[in-house]
Image (cartoon, rainbow, N blue to C red; front, side):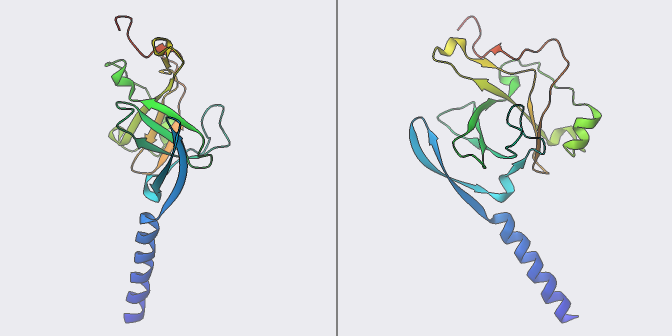
Length: 168
């Protein structure tokens, strides 16, 4: 019995160490190379990748005060690739992504409150022309570390919604 308890304790400690383990990346932000440590518990796996980037499956969301209210969707397999993302409700307060049964199943969503919804921002030279993809949000199940880019069938949303309102 004591041997089993020691073995179980050892496996439990190994799992906790793995969860705490991290990877170190060198990324470029605003023209400067920076180090980024990503805890394994912060890794989001996209089984199908992102649209147009199907070969990349591991990402993390990185908050960056210099970019607030946006964040980075950082590829862990290609540190040179990061998308600027924003919560779509920051752009359109009544935004609501209807996630169907297959998508919810693939995301392992048991509770809608477990989902974080992000929209990819396309930044161009003139910020007034930058856009947000509201039609294909990135959904992250933060409890399970699973993500998926979902293409909505809602005609209210566009692939190129203006980032800034016309009054800006």
